[in-house]
Image (cartoon, rainbow, N blue to C red):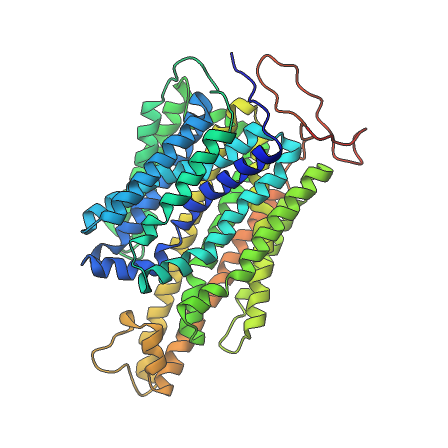
Amino acid sequence: MEREPEAVAGRGLAFVVVALFITMLLAALNQTVFSTALPTIVGDLSGVDQMLWVTTAYILAVTIMMPIYGKLGDLAGHKRALYGALGLFLAGSVIGGLAHNMPVLVAARALQGLGGGGLMILPQAIIADIVPPRRRGTYMGIIAGAWAFSSVLGPILGGWFSDTIGWRWAFWFNLPLGLVAISAAVFFLKIHPQRRDRPVLDIPGMMALVVATTALVFVTSWGGREYAWGSPVVLGLVALAAAAGTALVMVERRAAEPIIPLHLFRDRNFNVATAGGLLSSLAFMGVIVYLPSYLQMVTGMSATSSGLLLVPMSVGVQGAALGSGMAVSRTGRYRWMPPASAFLMAVGLYLLSTLDPSTSVWATSLYLLVFGIGAGIGFQMLVLIVQSSFPITEVGTATGAHQFFRQIGASLGSAVVGTLFTSRLMTFLAERLPSSGTGLPEGLDAKSLTPALVAQLPEDVRAVVVSSYDDALTPVYLYVLPVMIVALVLLLFIKERPLATTNVRPGEEPAAAVAPEGKGTRKVEDV
């Protein structure tokens, strides 16, 4: 028999929200802090040839664990699962901080990822445990700020650690933040386990999920970089992912407690929100991963300045997430938000496709602000829509499955945009440098160009390199634009359902859902 969570309100709720924000921030920062610290780290550990694994190990473990944590949280309790996730993440941080060779570093990143998957999912599930759907949007908007902060703060911190106190602090700084999150959860988060009986684990489903996800992540990491897209290795991985995915579906049809229950896909809002979230994540990661490099190479900005230029996008994400969440809490209406999100992101992609070396900083900031507002309106709202489509006992499972597919979209976005960008860049440099009547200085090739080296090139050569970077990346954003148009069309089919003012649990009478203002008979009252 399930028990009702004790009420969390006032100062206690504030501490819990802060703890969940820090938890999400830890996971988000560890996807961005190494973007600037990694060159120093691999150089110090003599592992430049293994650089890809530092990132891939983390992303792979995070992606695999998302749906697993969602299910385990529903079975054993989200609070217990959070403790486990934080413990694994902090253990990985300690090992990473002490690492003196690349194999240990990669293992530490994988261990961090095993916890990081839970840090991304469980805060959202816990908010659903303690806050009813009608009020949930505001708090989801606050938590969404972790991603906004990390997109700017992560690269800056990584660079600062590398240049000053040492790259190992990219691991050590996790410890005090993690301890704060654990302490706040221990003292202020009062949630009873979801189930008293012993959980039944879907081991075959987990194994099939691991194989399918591993193959797919390797495809996105290696395709077009380590191996050609048509190579036997990549095609073999695609076949393996398809086979394991088919096996996963067959296993989940018979499992007592499936990791990704197939009945989730019988809900229209889950399908539409998840597909729209996957496509939006693809576009979002395509922008934030490669735009700083573009700004450094084309405009001559420093790494810090190019990172700071993402602040407008961060402000847009945070402001829009919080504003849209408060609007839902006040009015109960949300159907217009996901399509508006996709529309603004599409507008932002078009504006970014017009960038050139003469574009002012203010114009670039405005374009990023528009794109960020679009992302902020939709990302957490899609999670709220998914959570509201299922009973509270399945909120973790539904959230984990939704975020799993969005993470797949993010990996695909990074891979697709990266492949298009680099292939176009190499082609343009190969064509234009010889035809310009000059070439790169002896001992320097196109693959080893850095912003500092580009700034020192003769003016005619530098102009060719800058124009190649400009022509290689900005049209790619136009290529991604149809993806957001498809997302926009899909998200128009979101069905607006009244948001309940209490969390309904087994054995209880459902509380009367409150219709959006103007459609129902009364306003929502605070719980």
